[in-house]
Length: 109
Image (tube, rainbow, N blue to C red; front, top):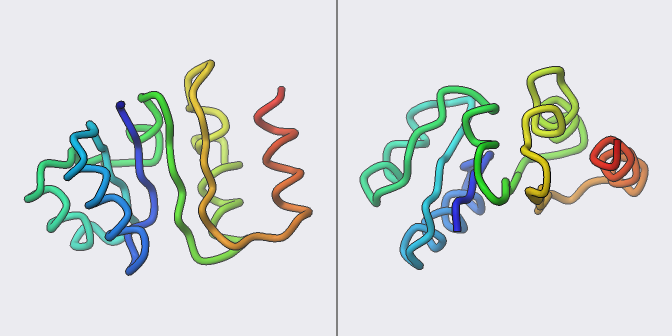
């Protein structure tokens, strides 16, 4: 499966690494490029921007909070606007019900 992974903190890095080790084609993005290095050494591909991580079958976001998820997902060049038709956005972050509903509505359009 071709998967984009956005958010490479402690949890996101481990999750993305497991996907790479399981044989998935993983493209990673993080605001801090140095957090991408270990995953690139495992065989992940580097996304220069959020849109580059949205070209596969699914994109997983593992971000800190509502603000971070909203910025990455709902910006003009964010996940909602760049994800191809039929692809999945899996938000693994702890977010509010309100933002979850907003994301669902945005993806439905």
